[in-house]
Length: 251
Ligand SMILES: Nc1ncnc2c1ncn2[C@@H]1O[C@H](COP(=O)(O)OP(=O)(O)OP(=O)(O)O)[C@@H](O)[C@H]1O
Ligand SMILES: [Mg+2]
Image: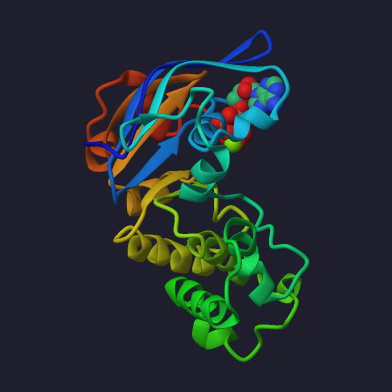
């Protein structure tokens, strides 16, 4: 069973129809890339999965979105639990103006009742290890996170999600502010993380999609035009519009 499925998903920003009858499925512990020109609805689709669009005035959603077989668009969904299970990393790394340590335990302090110091310490170590930052930072945990490099900040933002034990990691152009070397290292990290997490990445970088993802979806003007195994999408797309996009004919 896929980890996430959408069926007949539509979304409107006021009168604007931003997602049009999107039917998709995302495999567990795989990386799925969403590609497509600017404004086609990639970020909107990602935000459906943790109900972040709810924060935007005038948004209306119809259709079904299920995670682990449970429809998350209905009114009864516990949004705190959902956002713990489905974490999101953004284009610009956005650590809090707190220490490295406090950034990581922030979510646990919110979600947990009364967590003991040694449990928090263990969680900081586990989270930093899983993003390969522990050796680098273990002696500087009280340093302000804002002093880290961009790549370290982005890794820290991933560690901060991992600390609350999510299942799904949504990444919206997570490497777009990084240089090619840092990008390659974060891609390596993603391959490592997919052993434990279902990852959905939005990217403008088609080489990146081809390199890291197992499956790829191509969107255009709010529609999911084509969805399939990454190697098929990039070598033998079924749709002319997909081919035009990946060969650089538009956007
Ligand atoms: N808060 C909003 N209110 C109204 N319209 C919005 C809002 N957010 C996005 N849109 C519109 O919805 C469409 C899809 O936007 P979205 O940000 O999902 O696209 P995208 O594929 O992520 O683009 P980009 O590659 O530039 O990040 C665009 O036409 C955009 O202008
Ligand atoms: Mg976007």
